Length: 235
Image 1 (spheres, rainbow, N blue to C red):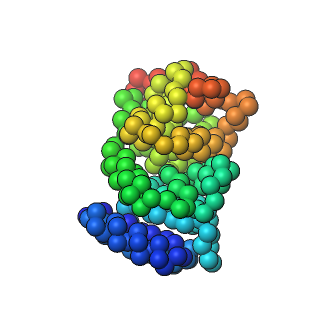
Image 2 (cartoon, rainbow, N blue to C red):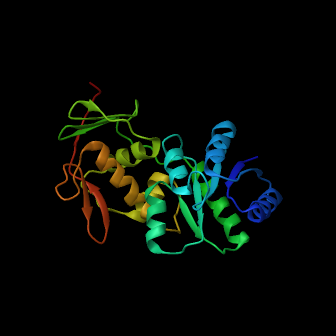
Image 3 (cartoon, rainbow, N blue to C red):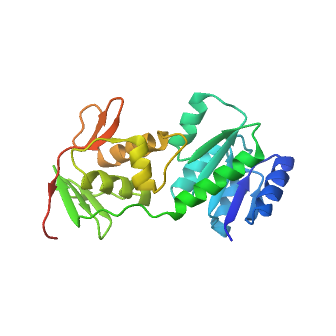
């Protein structure tokens, strides 16, 4: 049974969502503010989080930001505001999906199912053992990355994305292709999550979007890694 955590300060909505999701066979836990939501997450280790943006004590964006430092579980954000800027901000702090109120409970349940399916599918593993490019080294078996000899700590999905690009040097991938290969699903929603992960990777690697050493943006298409030199043996 998958465990879901609903963090929302509206009691009626918590009750409605809890009932609907339990009817679908999920275990549902709830919290009514940001601080208790973080505590509930750490105590229960849910498989997915449904998170309202407007929360007392700690707002939903900050909750999402903190959770993303600890986990890659799917996070679906809820908000009463339906502006593009709000959606971009939510995705930039790590949300996987975004739903504006009022919404259909049936639609939310469908998105929960889809997010859990995506999370359950392992990404396509890179074939190479280790690759190196202009001071960037990706050690696939050990899941380690170094830039100019300095180890760069990456979250699991950040590593998977970088390893995928390094495995296909010079090849341009659309965002939807990256989602399908790295996240392991045919994505039908917003693809800005790729932009968010690329932005974070660049920051951690010290790469500059305007003069990239490694990850290049191809306008109107997607991303590619500059030509890499494949290693034939581990050093």
